[in-house]
Length: 331
Image (cartoon, rainbow, N blue to C red; front, side, top):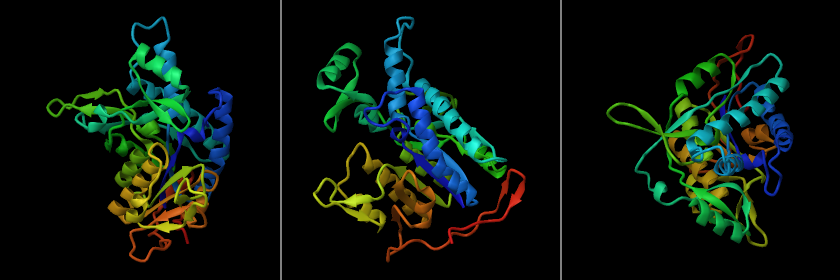
């Protein structure tokens, strides 16, 4: 099976942690153990990662650098996070998968220049702030901040992705048995001039879950897995006794009252992929990607009228690092 996995930026740098390189390296080591199981089970793998904490850190550094006449724009900082996180993931995957190659690819995501998100920033980036720190940043730098739980964080525009531009390159790498890390942070957001075709970067951060769902559709993926820090999507979130959901329809998933800044985009992306393709979408724990694919953990999203875990997907042949490998299904 061809599997696209969305890995959250907070999985690499958790709330309240120091944004040190060695801290993120430890989290990458833990996350890749789960990803490697998918490859060892015979599946093609594409990894999309978030970048909220990391791009926020780079934005602060850029804004306070006295050598710069102006801070670097978010599209350029997004490309930097693709390289930074991509190399950590690629090195760890290569170490865990002898004989296989892993490539981190800087990719661009086309967005609509008239997307209403540019007028209503709501994508959290960066570290937690006190209310006073948030007010000071709004006054001094013109940033927009919003409450995120008991703290505040910077928010930026997050337009919906229209196309991941490097899909032909990604497909070619997969055909040669490469594990591909791409669309990091949702990809570098760009708009296209309809007359000249010129691409221009924009001041935004694309949501990685929506980008992963779109990329999975463009690649004809058999499954979209969204990995997070909980075992399931829960009904009655925030109540005394929330209930874990094992199987849901896209409509049921959309009807849930989920937190805007965390689980809601995951749910919307999973529902959209399942509806548009009729294929497997699932949300589940970071440490058991293979279990999510097999339906032993996580929340499976199905378009079937009688909701249940989907049966085996038609096998997809593909090469290994040494030649052709036999096709596998979920069984």
